[in-house]
Length: 334
Image 1 (tube, helix red, strand yellow):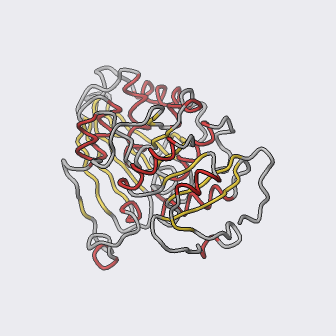
Image 2 (cartoon, rainbow, N blue to C red):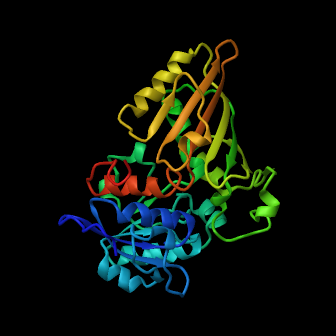
């Protein structure tokens, strides 16, 4: 249990998938959230576990997954499960009348064919499903029943590009060169993520075959060349985005579009005079955006950084929860 007593008006919240990297961040954030009573944290496995790193933040046991128990004790459930498990659990919890916030990719793609290709365990999207980047979904979130949180790579790319697309400034191919820390691959060890394989190296992967490409193309309605790289860091994402703007676009117009989009967004920081780095955002809920434009050639380079486990996963999910429930967007995060 948490050392902090829940406030009388708190929302009863459960977590399914509380032992993964993003799941443990969810427990950490929600256990201290002033508007939350954390009623249960469950894993996708069959053992009861404790989380030593969260001692005196949350001293409960992580129980084996039990949807009936979650339904009895919760009003809102966060899913930090693998896609196949999330597909079944999300639909079942919605049928039981709960609201769900899913961190997996199971419910992100609207097109049936693309969803069948990338997330074959997901059938039809439940009624009330909302793909929700909080900065762009504030008005729709209160009515959502199932919130599908964007992936970590798309979160960075879409926060940088969508305001420019909305303003009609983009006029060329979009190339996204992305670097991610190893925690983005999840907790299960593989040859690629093993310390001996990753330390002292950097590697591209998933070229023309990464599922996040479909998610970004869905949001931007244009073709994307996306090349992710694994770098020897625990956490963090840096994306360098290359594109062109409409001829005659001044640097000031790019800055104006971004400032207008994020004037009321507490978790997006714009770098007018510099370029962000991973160390500026690691262990924070912020997304930092910087840019440079060559007005003579209309070439635009954007640099975006965020923490893949927080703004790319857990803290973004809590942002969506806050907006869904009519709470201060910053609650439990700042």
